[in-house]
Amino acid sequence: MTRYIDVHDLARLVNRKGLPTCLVEMAEYIRQDYLRWQAFEKCARVANHSPGGVIELMPVSDASLYAFKYVNGHPKNTQHDLPTVMAFGTLADVDTGTPLLLSEMTLTTAIRTAATSALAARYLAREDSRSMALIGNGSQSEFQAIAFNTLMGIDEIRLYDIDPAATAKLVANLAGRPGLKLIVASSVAEAVRGADIVTTVTADKAYATILTPEMIEPGMHLNAVGGDCPGKTELHRDIVEQARVIVEYEPQSRVEGEIQQLAKESPVVEFWQVIAGLVRGRENARQVTLFDSVGFALEDYSALRYVLDTARMLGIGQDIALVPKLDDPKDLYALLQPRVVGVRSMRKADTACA
Image 1 (cartoon, helix red, strand yellow):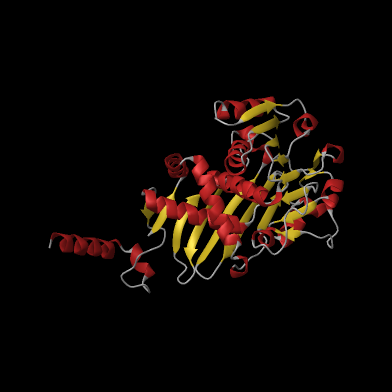
Image 2 (spheres, one colour; image 1 turned 90 degrees about the horizontal axis):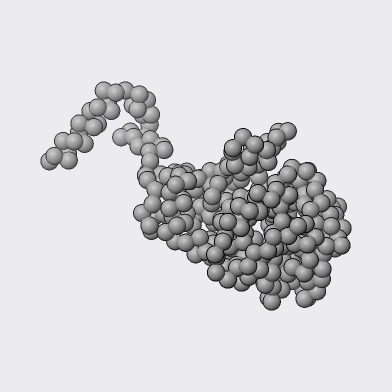
């Protein structure tokens, strides 16, 4: 049987554990899997682009488990009362191909993205970082704010969005959260000024310049989340050229990330190298670091592992017959014969009575 987790199950799981705990635990799953980087069969995601957005498949596997995520990105969906991002995913046994988990991943992706962002900041931001500018206050913003507060000790967040209603939504959702001060800024420049960390998580599918060079101060850590497909960026090219750039998976980031603006020979570091201690993330206190995050399938693998383990522990979700269970594994046609199915059911009933 396959464990099925719908969006209500996932929300119940998070509420049982607490979102801060889920962020911490999922970040640790992600860290552990990045430490096994060489054990995974990896590829860039497969993307089908349309004028309104993109639909993608994100596969990855090791010797034990295969994972994939279906995810879309349609910035104008909110005009139709639909989320910009929607996703589901599967975790399967490599030896047999049996699907172990079928899960929603819209909410899960928001959690894993925030967990990855804060995990990267632990390696790249200055240790004394306490303030963050959060540019883009849509669906991802609360998760980013709570993740950086929980994992990094960020206690002041300056907010800006071109849509004031989005910022008001974020403030209302996080009102009264202890140890977190929210400041609403009137511009990107005002939000960024003096911040230790800057997170950009905007949605427009365009070559945007949310951050320009004059906004960047020595020692900042930039967490660029919104640029995640060809033709979609958030940072001025000069910023990317001058920062120390860390990416998740270079072949994918060259196509989708901020570094799509750069020459192919421009140097970057993959995140697994930093986690493994092979290279330093931040080299000095005045260096500007950039986590050019587009989202990578390994993080979804980690998130699905975490969801399955936690759902089993808490008894959340249901087991479904996603694939057939046959008396004769060579006789699939038997499923279409009511008489045979009836006989099987009667036999089971007789056995139960006995």
